Length: 139
Image (cartoon, rainbow, N blue to C red; front, side, top):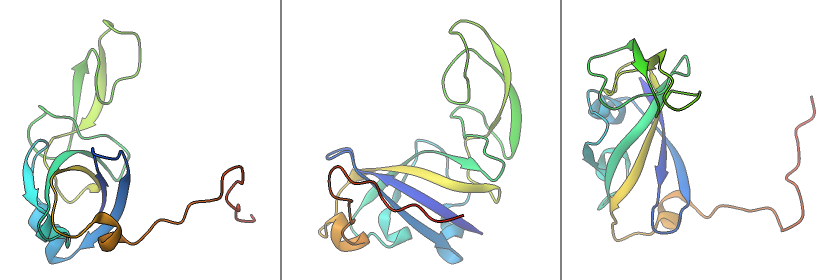
């Protein structure tokens, strides 16, 4: 079991990516959207994070309020997993609000900061100079 975790910092609007597997990933299994967990679980000592969503291996988004494990078809009129006219209801497939073995990506936001800065934990991001596009890979 392995997860990609996207961590959002509401203070500056930046996000950071990390990957966890093995024992670290097992600690997150069963957590629900809206729950908080210690950053020590993923190597961010002193931080506290809130689970805000994610997606499974087929690309279906996690949706708060859909209980259980796996994917389910639910009747939606808006929100996560719905694209269409507001007010029009559609039956859409979404993943439940609990983390299980099918989840690939987890989204979280920082609730409490630790002593180290995020740049010290994840390293400084290299940004392309203004006006230049990043180099594209050849096909």
